[in-house]
Length: 101
Image (cartoon, rainbow, N blue to C red; front, side, top):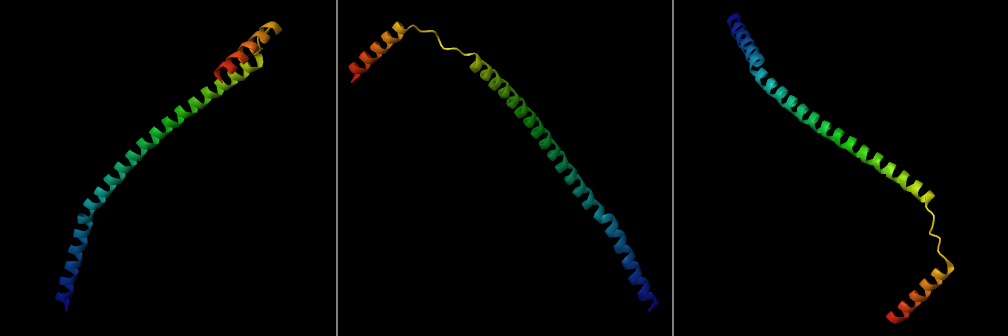
């Protein structure tokens, strides 16, 4: 019985040693894969941040353009047109419209 226990104990010991050293390769491969995925995800995040910054800049530029257009709208004044000129324009416009029909 003692020999059987020794043999079983020896097999258990050898199995444990093989499991410890044999499994380390798989762990290192998994760690390398995870590190590769982390690097790829970091690159993607960096690109997205750059895109967001570009979008923010365009939005700010468009806001500035809108403000300038509002200022121009406030300062806009129609042309001073004499009554005679307006009457001539309306007569010519009416003539052109009748001739097209």
